[in-house]
Image (cartoon, rainbow, N blue to C red; front, side, top):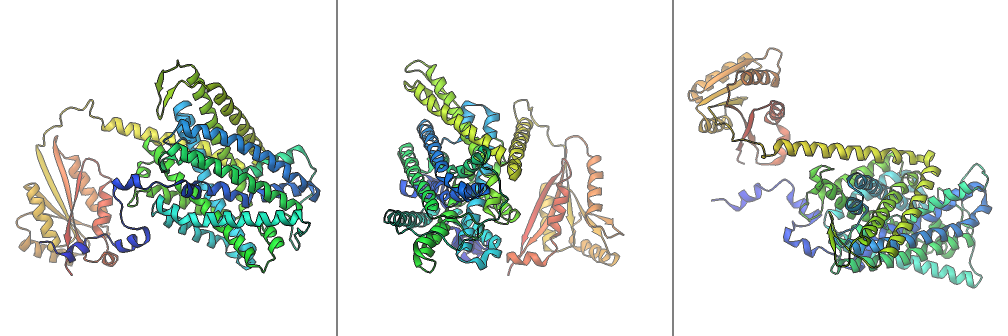
Length: 638
């Protein structure tokens, strides 16, 4: 009878720690209950867009200052132009959400309307964007901390990496749990920021708004104020639009009715984002804030409004830091889901479709964290250095999505009333408003395409060239993976597969490193499989060889013993050569099985005290073709 203590011993190592960190395992039937409300959805999917207000104004001013302080007055008109573009994109995605109630990101829309190759371009752009979102958001959050505590500036990379680890652990607990955990920080940020803006407006209208002082402004080489410089500032500020698509990607995570809840959340997010972005840019201009590598615009506004020693100033920076960290959560929600979609279609490794113990895509979350950490280290957690890589993927996915939707409405208009047409991810039917919807999505596609071109040209030498090369490289990798899976499916297909030939002979070879209980158990198993059994021992020491032969005479039970001499003390190579020779002499319909005995200690950490010969031998044997490898474990007691 199996005892309770035996059951505990069989649990995976440190299972209790995993349960404590990630929570107990969820059943597959729990998946429908892991949805979120609109309030939590705003925290999960809108935090990326809302957090962009913490650095979008900075990015506009950093470019304009190149033409002198007088050029900073253009920041507000540029912000208004960006808000107009935001409204166009929002209306376009509102249509997408209702057309694709099960999720309508650029990848799905492109696959449905533009074909496989364009869909992979969209997937590459989005995956790149999600990785950069984590790196940029975390780095910007660290910048808020170092603005308040300059002594931590030299430790910014370590702090950023610690934040990535924290975000990863929280998201591995599940979408519902991570959303609930991050809702409070998101709403705290909204509350403290809107309150600060209100105080700023009050002081502006009452004539008591102070100017920012003691700012170590950026040292720049003076340039002429040209259209190109203005467009460059506009493209930098367009980082405020990042994260808009997240809600359309995350529709399945919302409670029913999913489309309506997701659409309402998108509209609320856009309204809040537009107001905050306009207000921060306006107040920055009125308070003469200056772009600085050492202090963010948020910090300057808070310091001028509250004073540096005021707890409200620290609360503002604390809330901003939190929302920037939470912004990374948008990527943690969408990257694994998109990666799983592409993996399910055969363009990424199938492991990315695996749902872990908490019903989240574990491998996708880990992959996102790893690549984001690499970027943070490579760019020293500098937000400005990462921004040029950021928005190209965003606006490329915007353009593809809106183009796909425009084609969808055009095809809808070709149908007769009541007629339907089944597509890959949706059902298309006649829509009497197809012309106006096509115009909206078409106009949105043109606008986002222009911004993408402006960004690519203006930021090319600043690092945008990396993404321009990276996206087609990723697409090539996706197609290579897809080709492999297609060939694998063809090789494993039973369509032209005849009946397998019968086994005429089954030869078994047991690789032994000594004569002990584990060896004897493996021999018993081998003889139950076949009567043709040979034990093979690689001799490294003549004295040990004699001892083994002596034991084998007693315990070998008549099984043949083959000793392979190894004067150069090679352990695996002689055995592998011997097996190759046996394999070459094999007759038709003959099966060769290699059995590897392995003892299993009672404590997992005991493995570190042994050489793991069976493990390395098994790795070597895997390289041999048409050979069956079987491991026979022997469990040790206390």
